Image (tube, rainbow, N blue to C red):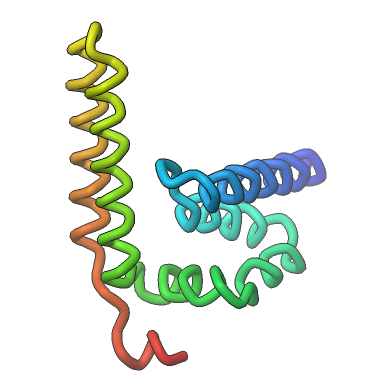
Length: 129
């Protein structure tokens, strides 16, 4: 049974990495949140894959700050909220026939933006390390 769980977690981790890669090139999709989930899945299934994510030169520091402090840097917060705003504008432009969809997306994005904005910023000690 543990082998099945391990394989499922590794599969989930790779799916999250794939979504993060898509998010790295599409401005309307996030990257780091998918990598946070991938790191958590790999932590429970493959320490080697987790270490690769945590030691990545670009994403590793963000993942480390999240893991240590639950912190999101101010530039990342601003970028995330701006991307959510762009997503909302696209929904308003392209889903005009469905006001219920617009309202639902606006609610979800507002909740996500509020969550992101209320996360702490990294401490100066953790930001350096």
